[in-house]
Length: 131
Image 1: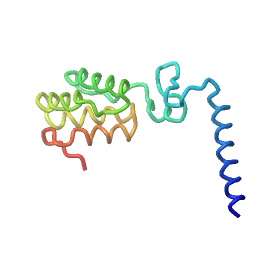
Image 2 (image 1 turned 45 degrees about the vertical axis):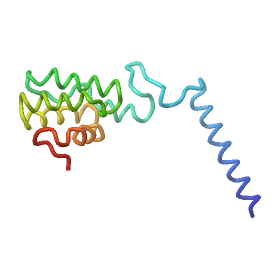
Image 3 (image 1 turned 135 degrees about the vertical axis):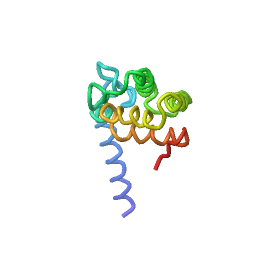
Image 4 (image 1 turned 30 degrees about the vertical axis):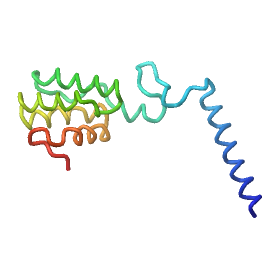
């Protein structure tokens, strides 16, 4: 029976290798592939860029929103220290409601995963609490 499972594991391994080489013939890793807009190619493209525009925000919050969008498109996450600094600035200028407005503006643009990531990153900034 050991010979059977060993042969089965080898078959599955080679099948995955062949599929990968057919799917990505250039040798690029899937994480490195980008479409014409610079978005990750493949499944994540539809999840990350769901809409062309974020929700509208007050004019005084637009520079902060644009900075957050630029950081997310550059890093693909919100782990940068800049994000906390931006959250503090928004809190000082527009308070908790301004932070909610900016965070919610990202939802149609990047989806629930990025929205939740920003919520968690801002935990403890002003009155902000990630649930």
